Length: 49
Image 1 (cartoon, rainbow, N blue to C red):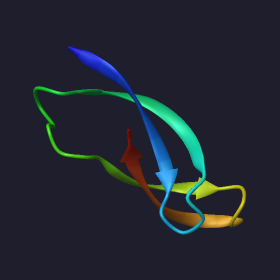
Image 2: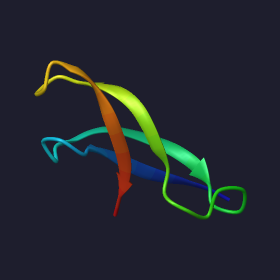
Image 3: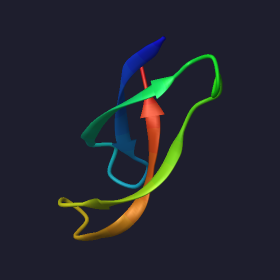
Image 4: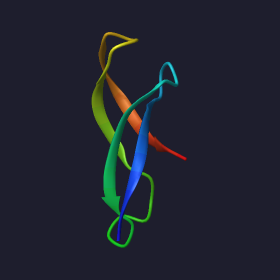
């Protein structure tokens, strides 16, 4: 049931991370606070298609 998702920075729109999530447990989009190398700080990264 786990699917690979891509996380993109909300500030600069770069896709920096890929991770997995269980679609059955979390059907909505995931938001995590991760480090963005382009922004050089921790920003919110949201799941993109």
